[in-house]
Length: 255
Image 1 (spheres, rainbow, N blue to C red):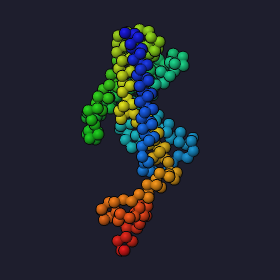
Image 2 (image 1 turned 120 degrees about the vertical axis):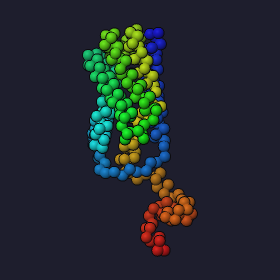
Image 3 (image 1 turned 60 degrees about the vertical axis):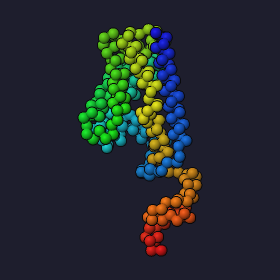
Image 4 (image 1 turned 90 degrees about the vertical axis):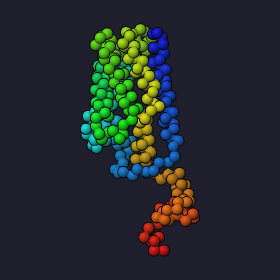
């Protein structure tokens, strides 16, 4: 059982990495997006890094546009980040820091997932955007965070210590093992859901919002000939997209 649990953890990590790379490659091959020309665009690598870190770590956009949701989703995301930091610091040998990061991360993750779950159930503004998968995913996150905390309280199994044992093929208590199974399966599941937006974020910013360079692919598409019959488009099966887009509606009507 110990070997199976450890193998599951390593396999889940491999699936997560492979799935994330697959999604990134898929996004990179998508057709040229429409430009989202919202300015100002952060200039230079330093400016873009600062902007991206503020979005990732502080969820600045949510804070600015949906303050009520921010108080629910920021603990959720921060909990995920701290759990990831805990694993990295564990591998680096910072055992004490890893334990504190794991406990703080699991607590924030449980609080955030529970708060988001309650909001999905009771907030009328969120109901049009809520599907059964949202309840399933948030419940899974809450369980994956709550069971290790319960194991810490009942079995005195510190989360980082549990993962050190699992990754080195040592046994762990039953409740802790259940938490490892839930977390491993969740990690393997994430890249194949909409929760993979952490991969899409790079493309959303760097390829849609910020990429204002002339694009040869866009120039080529402007030479296509539209065949729409709607009068307001002004297509006559001969004009290119560039001609249609560049024509003045008032001029076209007079002629």
